[in-house]
Image (cartoon, rainbow, N blue to C red; front, side):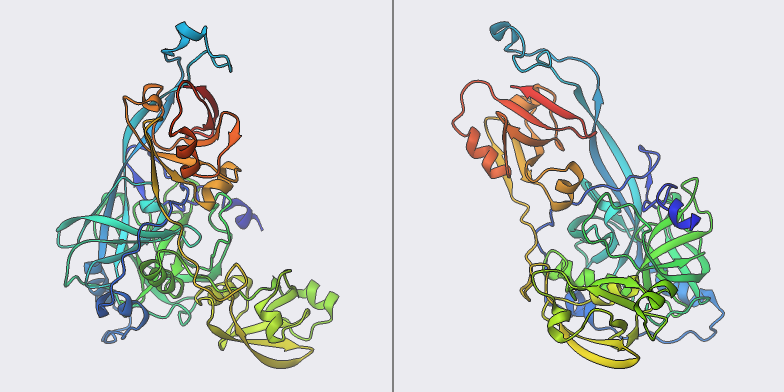
Length: 499
């Protein structure tokens, strides 16, 4: 499968956002979820889980109806961020004259970090009248400032409510009321060959509409998520033209209903080459609701080891069905599916009555549910169709709501900096079990004087591994004299420094 193997090596630009300074897009790591902003007004959370379809267009072959419905609810998002660029060179160690150089090596200096202001842009979709907007995680990830320009040219500063890197979805909010918003459509009901429109802001060209058809459904293994945990992918593939800047924009049907969020393109150049991918609205709706209500995504798990049914598995296992998802086993520690009665060699053919012809479709359908919810799992067992009511569990094997990671900021007066805990995806990227990230630096403090800036990850203090920001601050609260810092620079370089 040449195309599949090339998807990640080409610029599958889970990056349709344009970057005026960067020139090309890069997927970044997950932030800790922001403090949850949740309102019980019908226009916010209730709006996310119950929808009324708009009036059907008078002429199904006319794109103008859908364009007029969608365009007012699609916004232009711009972000600003400060990144540090390493400059090779030595900085003067103020203690060198007293200690005769750095006793731990390194000559008493480090590569100086030079901050550079960078800007990028993308798109977003208003989903409630009181200012909630869905976009891609990679559009707002690591941004210091997020701004939104509406279709009528009004502009607002936006707050990032929370993000979910596993689906590449984020929710932001602007302080406004009576905004136009898109109605959710049915991403399960769309068919290959159906006309769709992509609405967004490619190349900073605001309010651009392109048309195409649904080319395929249930695409997976599209974006290299940098070892992200449990990626959830079941993309809608279209040939509607999307380009850098379309990220986070709307994919709508001819009724003007939102059926997906444009997320990635298949390209050798970073620009549109015939294929684009959107997160189905069935996933978007659930993820957005969770981010608003809980600050993170509540994922339910069947607890099964699965693979897609193919001719080889049919022959090896003697199956009496040629389509579905094969149950090969159950993880240790308890399984919701096993407890409900599923067995090895069962083939899952439906979830809540929706066919599961692929592994990605099964994961999508289950991913829409929360721990504690019940799904009807239909299996083919030796040619006989059976239904099982499965109460989904969370990743810890129970039905509790999983709280989002606290984004607590700890101040260390000794270092002259503010620190935050690492997210799970950051730990996976740097291959560490603990540590803390610098979020703010006093230029006149110890770290600032030595050229450290936000983004640097501290992993050890005096050769002792540290678990989190609080531990670092406590170790240094009454510290006098020098300290050995070990950590990871923004470019992945391992750094050892004595302050």
